[in-house]
Each structure stands twice: as structure tokens, then as C-alpha cells.
Length: 169
Image (cartoon, helix red, strand yellow):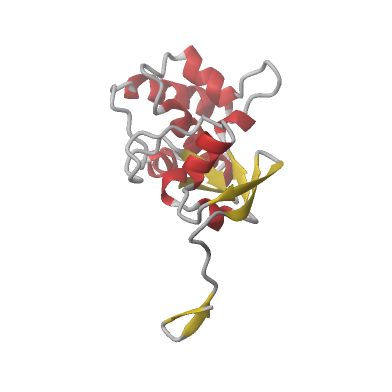
């Protein structure tokens, strides 16, 4: 045990340690160094690649996932910290060959160009609707405020969101 501010704290590492992650309802047990981010564990170890590495500084939202019903940037949390929590990625939204209504709205409204931001926007919007099923424009704006589209497809993104809001999803 290590002491931090006089309180015992369990230390991990420096080598790999077992990390158990529950992603999209499936448990994964990995051997990871404690410094590995959730994003790196998902992409590099599990080939779950919907969350994108773009800024790697928690500034763009392209790596947004839902952690225990709260949207977070997967690049900003260590995989070891996500243990015991439900992690949902964009991969969980499709049901068989059917797109989630939010995904379909993005397709219908040509709301992506390069596509790097798309999954982050979709996950963030899904989280907004999970918290506010009849989200107001202000709640939507607030919920998506951490997501950035470098290509400038905001017009299509706004149309996709409006399409879902009209359906009362």
C-alpha cells in the first residue's frame, strides 16, 4: 500500500495487471499496464473501434462512450478505472442489420464527411436522450457541447437531431 495524503491507496503495476471490462453487455478480461486508457484498451486489445482517437486530449468528443449512463471521453479515463462499470459504445446501437434511429438520421441527413466525429456525436446524443427523453434544444446543445466536427457538417448533424426530436425518440 502507498500513502496519499495520509490515506492508504492500493498501487498497481508497473507491469501488466488483470483488468475486467464490461463493454456492450459482454465481459472482457485483459492484461494491461495500469496506464492504458479505456480508448486504447478497446481499440488495440479488443478491436472495438467505434470510438475514434482524434485529439487524444479529451477536447473533441470523437471517443465518446457511455459509462454507467454518463457520456465520457474514453481517452481521458484509464481502463483500470472503468472496471465494474457498464460501458456502451456505438457498436451496441445497431440491432442486427437495423441502424439505431439516431444512426439512421445521420445517414438520412448526410451528417458526416470524414466520419471521425460521427460515432462520438451519436453516442453523446444517445446519452442526452437517455437522460432527457424529450430533450429541449438547450439540453441537446449542452449534451453535445463537447463534440467537435472538424469538417463542418454541423448542418447535417442539426438536421439529424431535428429528425429524431420530431419523432419524439
